[in-house]
Length: 114
Image 1 (tube, rainbow, N blue to C red):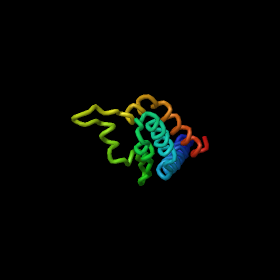
Image 2: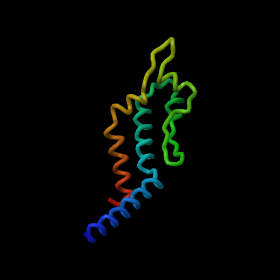
Image 3: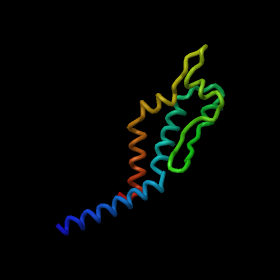
Image 4: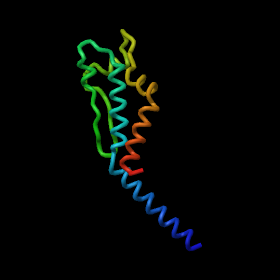
């Protein structure tokens, strides 16, 4: 019974260490964000290239945000009452979910030394 408790303590410490690593390191989220950005930019319609080049990935506390700063990007994606949208970000997510999650997993494994 003592060995079982020692094992639990070791596991608990290992999980605490893992949780601390994940909470203080957003590299895996950044990897997912940059992968999504790259795929979204491939799908984005291009006239001058301004919107496509306005894409960004931003880390805020323990979160990562991806978006486009061009003022009209929302309307291109969602549409307007006079035109249908081109959901280039949504399409990038659905078409590349495995790539996005695989890249995030690889980065997490690198960070954890797995």
